[in-house]
Image (cartoon, rainbow, N blue to C red):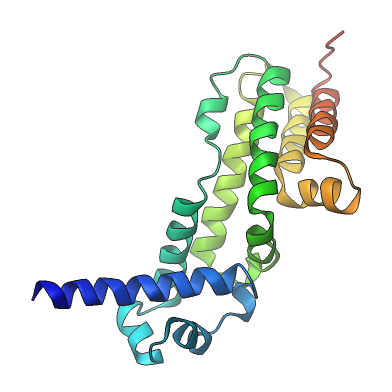
Length: 192
């Protein structure tokens, strides 16, 4: 009985790992159940036995990928005083994570709209938590706060990092410096 349970777990893990490989190469929009089954060396029926709906497959895939590539913790960023110091530290971590995981993240972020609504929502919450942590306790109010929030959302975006480093040729430190200065400008915080 125990051996059977281990085989079931191993099969499930092969399906999840196959889904991760496909999502991070061809992207979620081009990943099919047939493709997952072929990549995992199982039948489509086996995939459906383990994952009766696409949401459960995406959830398992996302959990596995995050376990292998943990993102920075925005809660830790909130403990750093001052928008400038916090954003410099946070964006250094975030952009370093993007650099390390960018090849995997590109097809995932690109195909975001092809994902189940629950997965899209979870991804949006993650990026919102990054942005919120940058500007927490800034003391900025009114229209300036709206502008600061929008800028925080912009600088934590994978696409902003991708544009600055891949398309514009900046290194990570230069991208961080530019993003921090943009955020400070939006907040109208003077550092000198």
